[in-house]
Amino acid sequence: MPGKAAVVSVSDKQLRVLKKLSVSKSEAPMLVQRAKITLLAHEERSNGAIAQAVGLNRIDVGKWRRRWRDTQEQLAALEAREPQRLAEAIRETLRDAPRPGCGGAITAEQVTQIQALACETPSVSGRPITHWTHRELRDEILKRAIVPKISLGHVGTLLRKSALKPHRCEQWLNTTEKDPEVFARQVEEVCQTYLEAPQRYAADGTRTVSVDEMTGLQALERAAPDKELIPGEAAKREFEYIRHGTTTLIGNWDVVQGAMFAETSGPTRTEADFVAHIQRTVATDPEAPWVFLLDNLNVHWSASLVEWIRDVCEPARELGKKRPTRRAEKPSQPTTVSVG
Image 1: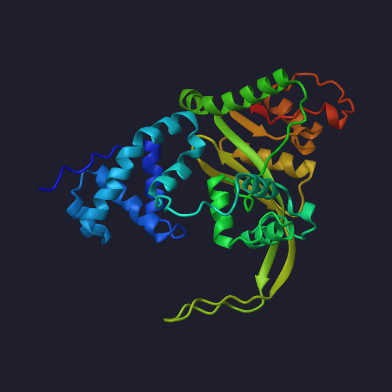
Image 2: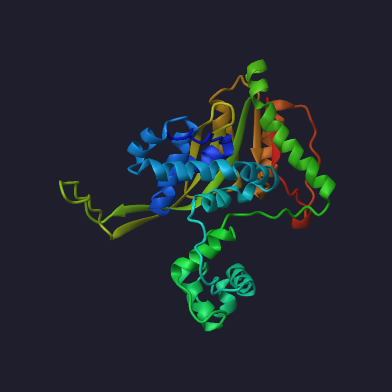
């Protein structure tokens, strides 16, 4: 008689990883299939139903079901201890077990050297590229004689196991504020302003707006009309274009409504342009209190803007003379300006 199917338990984080694997176009087909098996087993489907759904026999379905059951405690422990390694641990669980025979041709020391190379910028090796590709990395590995031979697929496997992604880069902004306590207060002030925005809007209609610019936008016109889509062929767009100069977009993001509004587009981003933009924005709801969150670009704290805010909020208030401010003395974090 057939035995009872293994009970599969999957956490929420594991479920997200498995769902992503089950629809991946870049992972190995066997890995995708085994992710689907685990997901269906989590739904308490029978081995026969799973086998029919994924195109596999019941024996193999049971094998991968048991594999997950036998490792789910270790996965749960890893998820609590090192969540960043969970995705690769799940991939390892769904891969074939090591086969008997000779050990790997690449030693642990060589793997470490390859990892160190992947963490270097390509310019260190004299390569005129900004990010490593598998091919460029393989060529440099062989050039440095780290190993006598290695395939592109093996390079990719080593990078995945090491959780290294040298082909990717994320934007990062360093603060100019050197005092960590001051920096913490500044961050807390800005974050608290965002958090309180819904309550302020509900209480008295306060509009909380994040403002920023995008400069140097090219106004381009295609030199010829597009060719429409027809059966068997993709739509075609003319490669050549005509330049019509550049423009600057000043955008408003309504924090509560989650939408852009009252954008300004023009050839420049001067002090006068920004004051006019704020005036037009406030005019869209003149009775409401306003809170603007801005970075520390000089036009965001100009004398003209301060004077206009004074005229709107406290006409009788005397303003002191603006003293010259060195760049290093400028506040390093986004600041809030309240109008109303």
